[in-house]
Image 1 (cartoon, helix red, strand yellow):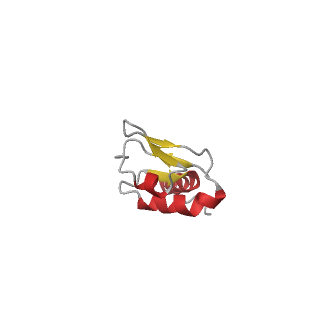
Image 2 (cartoon, rainbow, N blue to C red; image 1 turned 30 degrees about the vertical axis):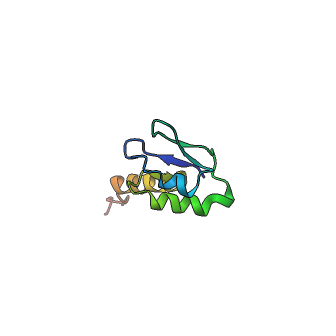
Image 3 (cartoon, rainbow, N blue to C red; image 1 turned 90 degrees about the vertical axis):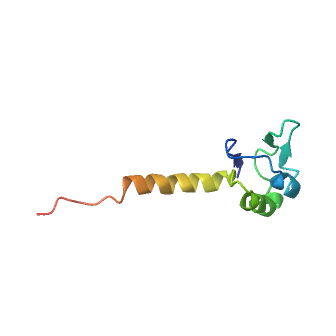
Length: 86
């Protein structure tokens, strides 16, 4: 599982860095960097807390993002149905 950041939404509050410095880092320009490619299993619960704690909701776990995208696509397409009644 990977962490994604919405750079437009991120305000560099640093909540995530305070919770999981092994995964998140703010540089001197207040740009957030994700240090871990895949979230280590042992850090996953704390990373999930960091995602939920982001005051701007700028963080997502890749699996969550994929599920949200699938739900949005399903909502746009609607439920297929058969209109070929006789």
